[in-house]
Length: 365
Image (cartoon, rainbow, N blue to C red; front, top):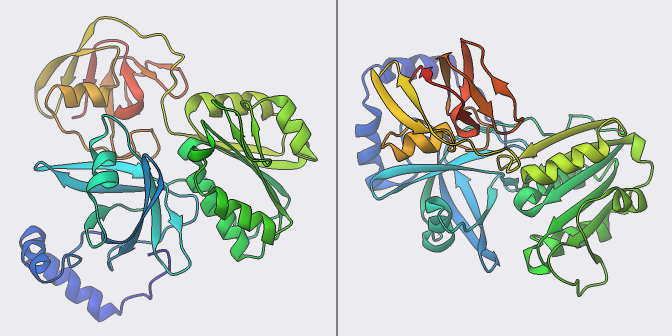
């Protein structure tokens, strides 16, 4: 899946273009799947070839894709989908790129998460899932230089682990510190793998922290991210290039502590900010393409509100990265939950998953 594929001969591409005009992909997929569940006309599909319980409420699934799956760079994300009760449900995960061409996704079960519960409890080796094209910019350059600092909280470890493994495959050419926070020691995913990488490569150092219990191991400290921990454990901080990944509160704190005092700072947050005030009341949202007007709550994201109203807009990551749910806004104001910004430009694009309605809206839906 991650490896590049050879270019197809021109004659084959012409034949494929001709057949595309005549073949019904859904019809082809229906009958082809009776022979091999990975066969499809153009849909990227992946078979589960490995399953490992990594915590009481989390699993790692290893996936091998079909020929329609594109390349994935370490640090990127993919949308993973399955049909549940007759409806396709899609969520975003950060895969670890394995040396044998497979991808591994780590899934934490969420109480009201239909797909996460299915992936954790229902999926077995041999099952087939849909996957989307890779997206995300928190990747490493082709030639790495300088000193790096990776900051992870919770499941934010997965894209950073992929980057660490990429650097290890290059024989760790730069200095890297990884600081990783979780609720408890059992929640430190891949801790043994990270310890093994640190033992093998002196240029890589890993620092574990727990926030809700007393640590039992000598290499695990307690406490949340703060300036003291950063200064004590990371040498030459102004020279560091920083990547941070975790909940929005964690990422915001890291940015406030480091931005302007390090060589560069980039981050991805996987939850909207919970510090913004919740606005009461409803607004009128007109869906121009459907000719439909709905009364939707200000307190909910537009994506969640539309889904609660019985609609099924295209969506993917649900955290403002993949742009699957992006649509045009013709008029009205929205609140961006990642930045807190009130956006009132009359004609603009917005991501339904990380925006709330702040006034009556007209959307291109």
